[in-house]
Length: 114
Length: 115
Image (cartoon, rainbow over all chains, first blue to last red; front, side, top):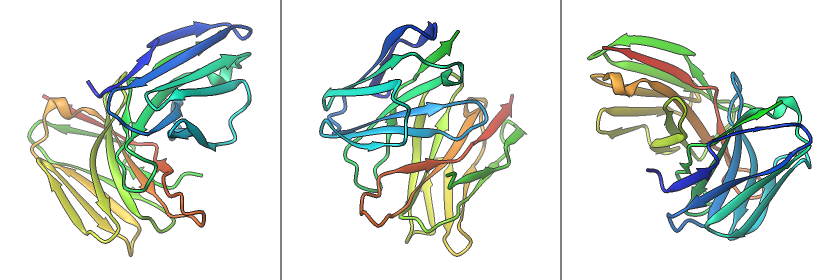
């Protein structure tokens, strides 16, 4: 148990569907992150939130829309995705966005786009 | 752009042997972290070493950092089958904006420990 919970664990959706990924952390952290992990590629940072405010959008297409209603919850809203968006989406949290902060990861949502 | 790069890409050893994985990076860093990922799970933080440190230990883990060569190594001693996982290095590099919180990960080393 890492203290970071992601739901659902698996998601299959068509390109025209709308779905949302959810992340919740019980660690009292103030920073939360979305990463994309594709086969044979390094982990890609997508978004960073610090005290509910977005501080980083790593040139992510607008079909991915993050939402952070409070420091404990993070969502990733998905709309009109492409087959290349199939990947493992990982949420992480850390105490702050300052350097030298270990990140705590959830077990991810395995997303498959038909 | 990819900062850290692990070597080898895959490593297979027998239980009880030591496993050494290496990480090279391109630009100067504040600190370097190692993570483990079991199949189908998220990443787990193992150890953090700061740029002014040369070696750090945690249980059966030993991490070294050579900033002159821009490289780090992770040694797992007396390996166990449960150590089978992918291992990633992540660098935390300073930037001009001062917001040095972006971790850049490598592609990882897949370690298999055979019973």
